[in-house]
Image 1 (tube, one colour):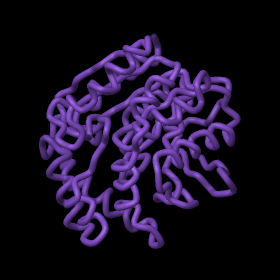
Image 2: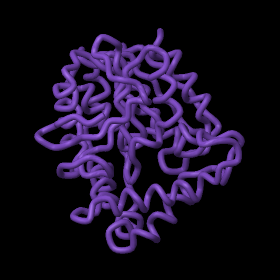
Image 3: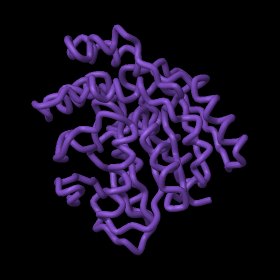
Image 4: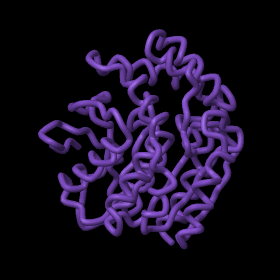
Length: 272
């Protein structure tokens, strides 16, 4: 479905089900150089089991119009405007990588309007190496290869979210290239990485969120190592939040390399 957000067409994958405002809603937020499709299995399952799903393409990415966010804070404001456009009083937020920072900042700003906060492949701070930042700006193909090396823990896990034996390495690179080329005006690769690198409000945001928090972390994640999420885990617990931590046998793309485990964690969390 498409929503008009700030006057721009915004694409939201609904899992093939008609959007029903009476149902609980989960908003899925992708990371840098990704789109809604990275949530294929999880979004589709929830859509067929009592939930509305809005798996968005962020502004300026793929099927969504508008200016691509230049900061995590800008992207969090987009989430607020998205909920307003969908006339949603409340929603759960599920974010991966940069999307996890966006979800966390949005939850801090929207308070009780957010019912659940699920952070997949997260870390704080989410620093990006100078070499990767430089490559994402001046040699994107080299940078795509670099993030592929760091992101995947295997080439074709059995099963992956696209079917047993799917060559996820190649599929991931193809998605990265498609997202990059979807916006000829802005390098969304470099802009997204800069937004990750500069985001400084993580520890404050996680304590300002008022809802339960789920962390899904990849044991073999080299982009956002599991240990780099511990400051957020400890801050959330220190603020008295209900916190769950699930570690999966995967690299940075947990929802693709360990789709059923991630789905199981989300189901248990959202239905608790």
